[in-house]
Image (cartoon, rainbow, N blue to C red; front, side):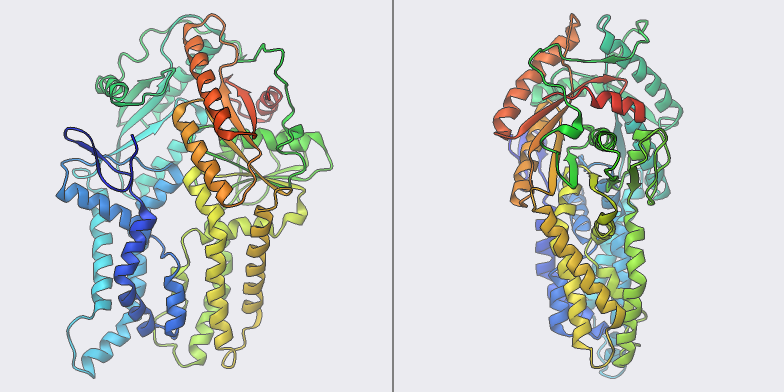
Length: 590
């Protein structure tokens, strides 16, 4: 059924809603804009025009906090239980960190208001709180209350869903460690899409063997001291009340019936290779959708295999031409390239073991990218404040940096690569899942507006303090963002390869993603349908899966129109490491 930001009845005693955090934030800022502007005017040397420009931009953590406030309100006033389907890993960690981020903003605003409050109380003899004081108290109290509630196991419980695959488990281990450090306890682990034993099959036997090894690892690692539930893989995604109710009954017994029996597994490697004589096998480097591009984004829904596809594509591009300098870059806060290659990768470009010498791999550290620019920005803002006699208006004039729009750190990380693009002929970007990736691609306009506000402040006070190197740097950042925007919209230079699976939910999200990318004027010449069962043989499960996938492929072809369809075979186990990735890349079909 169609869901919106308005609560809808699904069945008796069950409602559903899709929260719209940006819209909720717009309502919040409309209600609190005057008070927020007062705080900034009292605590800084900015004038009202500067402040209004800042308030036109997102405030860090507030949109996520507003979403959490709405969830909290529903739980306290309307429902006995609220179940929250979160975004993929990176975005979820940011959501759960929102209360701490907003508390930091509240502390900054309180420091800005402190001098005005003292003057008001001691000189004007006015002791009652103003709207600005009430705003600071309100957001601090809300952030503290929700942050505390998230950490109280009696009120908020967390279930972590993973797949019985090495990369999914590695990401889960990192995420659960981050949640533990934040004091958020995960009590339940659900291992999804576990194959039941349905008879001998070269593909299924190999997958079952890997999955049993992964289940054992889950119980030794992230499942230790937690309840582990196994959910059986189904050839067709459960959709609709009847199918979901059946899944719920299966989960209620802890998954004990999900993987009954353990057949002796074959130890041969297996790929589901098509025997269709009309299928054209391609080296990914020669695909028309990629050929000639200098910037390739690999995007799609979480769990469809973006990282594996991006790694295989970058390897193929580098192998195809030893003179081509290729950079494979991850912008996902929950990086997985190191897991795909089975090698350590960080913020500095590195060569992976057994990989081509002309391939560099990097996982962008967004926080470090912002910190690299932040010091100079804060120092210049403090100089301006001191020059106009406003050095005591706030404990730290550089606190204005706390109002940098969320995601600017990721934008600066990407810009640091873009500015060094002369060092590479092709850059392949492994993006975060859909929502987070779209925000990054939409962010350049917001980032440029923020830089323009800072530039306007510098120019306004240029008679008091020389803009110097900071102004030159801001101009360069603004130019870089504008050039990056132009490159994104250049179909010859930039392409987006959308990765999906032949199942209804990923297909529907893919259709929406292509629509948003088209609105952003980004070229999407092809869709890659990953992990297909191309040779079902006599296996009953594979034949059912094959039939379901073919139906979804037909629907996807109708939806994407003239865009190309690239098909990749299901591999057992999933390719990991340079040799396995290159071998798998040679099996791609169009």
